[in-house]
Image (tube, rainbow over all chains, first blue to last red; front, side, top):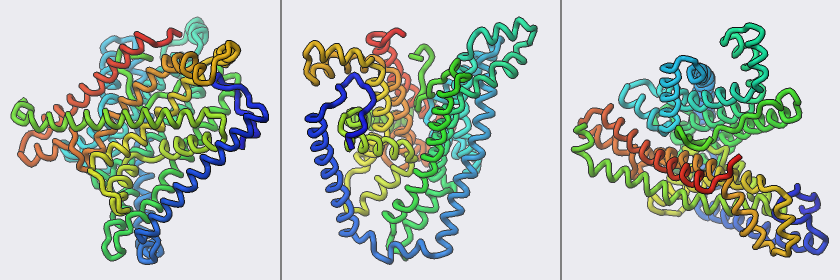
Length: 290
Length: 214
């Protein structure tokens, strides 16, 4: 457990033999506590009859499996739309924020800051309830507005982080601003931004589950339908145990892809010039810390 | 405008609900986040594994699913608590994963030499941590923790959809009373803006006061 020396940290020295033995004891103790917690949880599950055949049988029915698969398909559909549209909106807003025309810059800044400051769910509800849009377009529109504005900031910092000499050299060759951006800056920026973009797509994927709240028939909605069925003795916990690993697994795969990408980038000397920090889950107001 | 003045108490209740939820969940998230961050930088391997699993799982869980599991699932388990408490647990645990990552990154920004210097002066582990490492880490984590807490305030809207009293939930009642939906939403949006801007201002102030110039 403690054999591999942890990487250098300001907190403690690399442990010696006596300390290692002490750490091993701590490790065993904490593992025992965790195992006890898990055992207690399992006992509770058995005690409340969560493993009875009646509660798990439904998952063997073809209809139920199809219902779940359809839900999963709808989740992925919403994610695909939202991902493509937010990338497009992000690009447009980033160009707007980098524009030389002051009004264009102001309008895009205002849009970006507003949509980042609003809870996604409020936007989705507004589009769904007040504008009376169908669930899927309402969900996609809400996700696009939010993630698009976050991505706009990522794109902007990415473009700005490309070394100044690149831009100067391109202008010196007589390129126009559009050419400089599309031919010189953007290709280099994308390299550095890719991990951050993928992490933002994980946020979009997670947020597709908000569709459940506006009756969009996605994965969680399918789970709810099964869970609230009296014929199957309300298999609530089994449903959670089936759908959570799938949800978490999907998001983890995408997260790992982002991490893998980032690690590959770090080894790539070409991308060294521009490192784009993650766009946090929240928003930073104008004048706020950057 | 009528929507706000006619239903000021309703909006007030929702606003306070959101505020309460945000404050309680923030406290829980900061506490849990601190515990998990210390697990993740601990010299004991088992603790590091616990911290990593906690963060990885929660960061990749859709918050709606977490609310679904906690608010609707736990009662079937025989655990019955008020809905607001459930919402605080769900929001706090979810956000703690992000707080943990921010704190851990902050601790890692403190150069190794600082700790070595402290130890060579004969400081104990507690002194090294409390007097040398944490004060420096604290200064560099102000902005990320701030944006995480803003995200928490925004995420609390989901609790409203699970019938916890909070700001977004007010639209339902107003809708039934026949008020203009667009205006009710505009005032809800203003309410959220007030909360997120206030957190942002607080953290900008803290950043100016204690932040590190880099």
